[in-house]
Length: 321
Image (cartoon, rainbow, N blue to C red; front, side):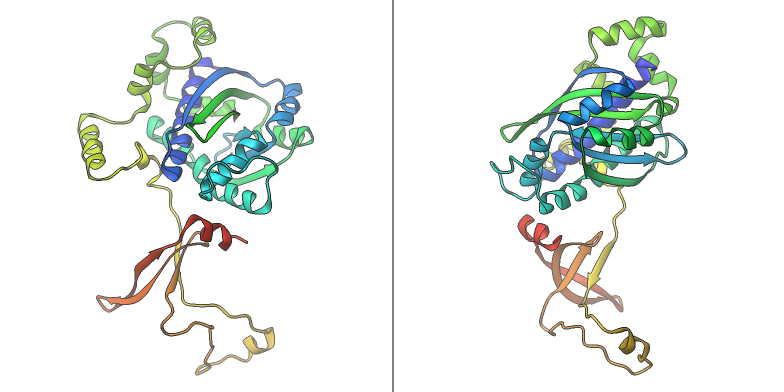
């Protein structure tokens, strides 16, 4: 393991990922990396015994994969917070909880990669993003996804007063090759790798000043702009980390189920009733999930949608069933 590069990856990835949760839940998550080292093959099953909820994704370009391991109770609480149910959520994860967490995992993992792209000036991409609940029996499949050489970063995270838990970040060490050398040098100066390893073992977490220099991503002008935005409205800090994630928005007029025979009989002039009344609002879906309703308008001879209602978290979860 290249300790300096792995430390930059872990801190940068976690910052981007937890920024997503800050924006999603209007909370302030803090985290502390307590330990980081090479993952021994025989220790993964032990990690999965306690942290059995797995967010995972493959990195394009042969760079391995990334994964986040969480405890079930922590993820049940997180799912409850996303659904607007503070103080609930301890216990087993139900189907609705898993649907909620799968929706969150894409933005969470993507936020981490987007932050690394900003720091490294790269174009890293994720694919096959998934969330599963497993256990020690999942070790073989997860190990195959991550590859032979893997870094494990153990951390505590919290958002007062709602959640306080632990997690493990795993990533293939081929990703270390994407870290610009100047970042490692800025972190460790001109010391040799073995000296850098000793320093990280003594203090694996970057200082607040170092993180501000390396990972904040704001110059003086950007900081001034961020402050101006905060005066206008309460916008979670660093929300711009997730603003370049592309989503598909669809306006749905209605839907209908038809037998194959009727579909084959369709031709010019055929009329299909979609079960939507004239005065009913049109639904707006983002990545297939209902988020708003509105009215059809015409803008410059093109159809548009004027949003009249943003649905509640409870309705959004109900739409996943």
